[in-house]
Length: 189
Image (cartoon, rainbow, N blue to C red; front, side):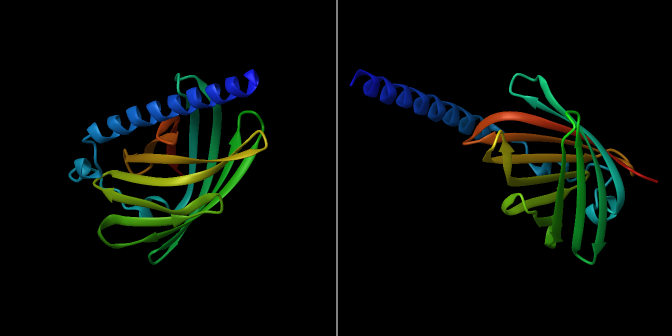
């Protein structure tokens, strides 16, 4: 009986911690005034079909909540567009020897809006460009040690010049920040 009470108490404490963290994360998110509109006048202007066309190399790290780099990777992206439809074929190589492939299928809509799908993305990703920035939000199925988790990504990309774009993404679950991905894209000449 005592073990049953202890197990229930531990579950309630854990759920309370998650709810508290989620509430704090939610309040912090509401206080933010950072929006895609803040970048409307920034140059150079990002046109996704122009930038994501051809071959792009990317270099990135994943940092946990404490800021410690826990995984490094490179990506080779082969990108093509036909009208308002784009394909971004990404091949990841991780520092621990692992490999992964993701194929994004993007659709350009009105007013700088984009939608996208990929096999490991839940539903449809939503994004928008303004000035030199692109904000991209989606839920990714992330396999970890034999279990798959659904985690949310809030990606911000900033065009630096015609060849270089920087990307910072926050990964979260239930509103709790799990870590960040930082990427540098370099378009091949």
